[in-house]
Image (tube, rainbow, N blue to C red):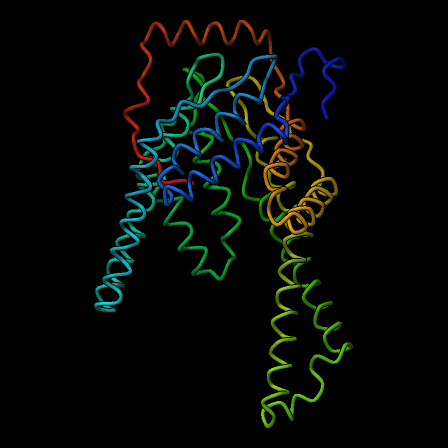
Length: 354
């Protein structure tokens, strides 16, 4: 956590949300979403984001979210409608279904660009809105071009594609008239991904050794002749695969999340002011594991408390390092925006995110 008293230029983020408060919002959202067959999910999203935004503070001032539930519902209906069309055409004609699938993939970057515009235009701090200026052409490069290149390269270009996505998001965002900046090169992303790949291979080797020692592969020559043995073998294999991916989520998930958060935000700035993040993988590991166990034991009822725990840790380990007086900076931004006119958020009226 960042100690505010030790550095006058250091402004840590704070999170004041509480599990009990959010649980009441979460359970009502869940009940109404089920009762309305999903229609209320748009209003549920607004209530959820408003709670997390308003309980996230910087220098004593909270953020806010102004999204219109109708606009969110519109975006979700578009998304669901496209999926229904795809399923119907696929069942009617495979070739036509594949054509619709390709069209959906082609449309996805545009929809993602609109969603980012909607989210930032409806987010504010001190009453001043954020903006996103990323072009549609840029969206097609980072959300379609680079993922396809990463796939064709068998994952070799995946870290580079990840870096380009973050650069597109951060370099094209702004608070008032001040732009955000992103300075991380692809190299650090490759280091994170290579470490993740190495740890995954090591975990897979250990899982294979454990399976061999525990006798999972014993008697494989007789399996095909005995349906009972085949059933037992397949059960062991499915359990082994499940445990492997569970370990990946609980062990490598927090490590990767911590490294990427620190990498991205330690290379992000707002005008002359730099962000900083010092999330630790071992702390996230403890949170992930205890949250997972608690959610299982409570049949999912601990989920809102888990969300609060994770948000509090990740936000309180971030800070804004000011260059000069931040109060003057925010006041100047407000004056600049008032002089040029506040752009309405209603221009960005499609949001497909959940």
